[in-house]
Length: 204
Length: 130
Figure 1 (cartoon, rainbow over the protein chains, first blue to last red):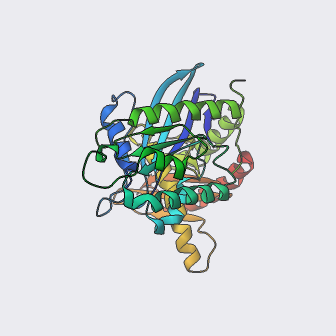
Figure 2 (figure 1 turned 45 degrees about the horizontal axis):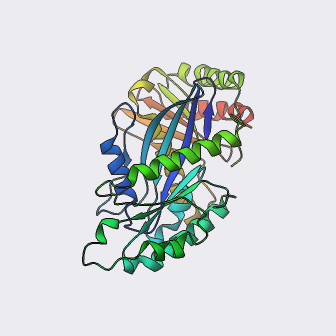
Figure 3 (figure 1 turned 120 degrees about the vertical axis):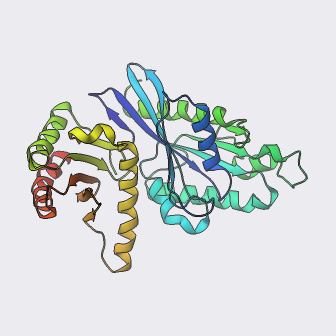
């Protein structure tokens, strides 16, 4: 559920980065945080836990400028990817307006990608939403590893697994190096703002 | 959770409730957030120094986490939470199913007064938000 504040002329949208454990959701947020100017970003909130897994969520508020006199603010959330944190993932999805599905290019993570996408579909359904309705972008992360000796999945193979009907815009990325991170963010912001505006009749 | 539409008049009525019942009782900052972490209304003079976006997101998460604790002991939900600090303390109360009232106060105000005032104002807020 987006929040539209008519008195302050602000629109707040919630975008969630979803995906299997250790696929690079937090790395996406950290790259965005480091690359954006202070005026456009808020404080990045991460709940400190031991180790480098996200146990609860990360939050990064961004200010995307004005559309039709309204200040557009987007809050980026990540979820914990590990299968056992199912209830936290469901909670973070509450009121979501757009989803970035981050897929892991490592060959060993093939099954985890598919499992996570299915989990996303189930969790959205429990909130009364579906992947057909909500704006979504797929990011094939860790493409920088293709040239390394580590076995990786080809783009064709990942598309076949995750986006066979080409339903969603997809991007190749390397969140560590920053390639594709802003392309993903730009696309999901555009789709989300359009979806929220249309849904709440700000535009026709 | 359905769509919530708040008109300026309604929002002013909500703010007036918060000002007249809670701020006037000595609570220095008051916020209403929804269970997805959106800020509905805020008031109080200390609000400038607080990162309210993070506070709202963490409050929603905090409630969701403690409701799992509630389920473990056979309760459906906890309707209020209280965290005591050295100088400032924070009180969270559920308003209906979807909203949370956050009150931040220092040791000049007793917890009893906060609870009493929050209970009183919750009724009115519930009507205004539904």
